[in-house]
Image 1 (cartoon, helix red, strand yellow):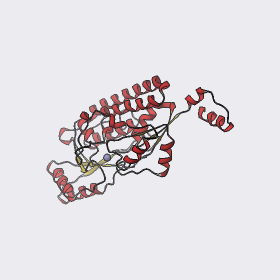
Image 2 (cartoon, rainbow, N blue to C red):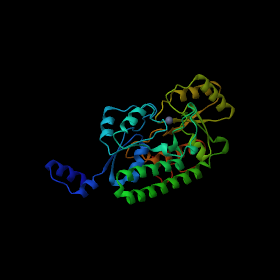
Image 3 (cartoon, protein in one colour):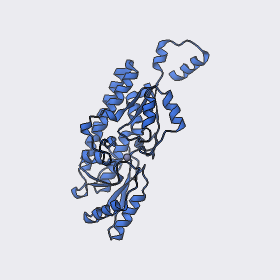
Image 4 (tube, helix red, strand yellow):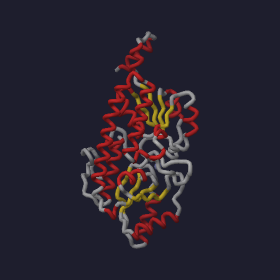
Length: 317
Ligand SMILES: [Zn+2]
């Protein structure tokens, strides 16, 4: 409403009182859905968020489109993840940072809390959203960035952030409770790429990815053979596919195990680097993790609620 009258006034060439300017929502562009969700949670009605990467989009290989460039150059604030997640967009954001307020929100996390990158000595594992505890640092960074561009709304952003951080704490506690019900021998998470190391650390799971931390390299036959042997030797029967990564190597793994007389099935589909459909519970950060926690717990033999922490997950996982 405020926005419409603002545009109307603009069209008439009317002089606007200062308060009207202050009330127009901040235009924020964010790369991943997880960051866009944090902006929406903290910014509330003071922001108009555009997330560049939708459901199923792989951030490791994503390049900015023409319309992304337009949106980012017109935004009041541009937030990207950093930690080399958006490997193909680094130059774009560094250049844009000379003209716009651009913040790499995950770069702010204390490096002592991060895991080393398996392939690059000077880089870190970027998948920090998988740990609710680490993600809280990112939410605080989003709050700081919004407050920097609109200091008058500091108290509003702080109150929203507190509420969201409390929800994340609740999710973390729920995850610990339900994942502890997975039989100890089954606490191994086999996934398409190495996105779940922080998740494993937080919730006490061993994590084995077919591909490395980035999805940009093909899984070698050696790696698949090695994992087949592990599945057989440890009698692991469930693996997990990811919504933003091709399941080709996962098929090869299942077939490899089958050739050795060991039946492995898909325990479910996880959201690794992108969230679910916008407008759904799975299309929020809390819903994305609730989904993963629930699918992993049930897929590995725990009897936990199908509809998740607060009964909001889609049925029939
Ligand atoms: Zn990834």
